[in-house]
Picture 1 (cartoon, rainbow, N blue to C red):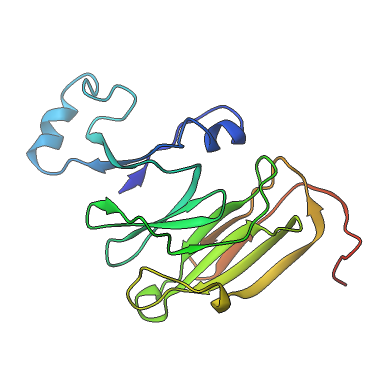
Picture 2 (tube, helix red, strand yellow; picture 1 turned 90 degrees about the vertical axis):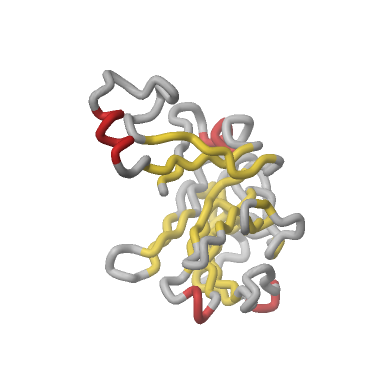
Length: 199
């Protein structure tokens, strides 16, 4: 599966109306249909996608979704900028968030990065990159319960915290598991040294 994201515009616009109400996923069409489609001059049903792909709306009503992570079970975890991490399971978006983080929301700050541990099925580790209420970038790990539907704020383990205040724009705060199996995180654009900076 491949997430389809709208290109162009500012980060704020991408966090806004362009993706605020839907998650779009493109699934490759397999088998003879792919061969038949490849002979056509273009993708007539979805002109903005390559031949052999289609858009399918999975969920609506999301507020500023910023990141998605796929669990081995087929569950999809969806981060929302204002702090909620939602769960899409069995064809529906569950009403109760898995966890809601306390985060700062200037313009482009908030919860921006989300990924799951390679051994998520057994350890439940979820990594989140976000802006703390006092405007610092932070990378944390939360442990999701065996049911997959909840995580306690008390399970938070802070891996890294920035020592400068984040700017309202271009915060980035992203996190991924690399091909080497290691956890990689990025953060950017600070404003000034914090009076409570860590040594």
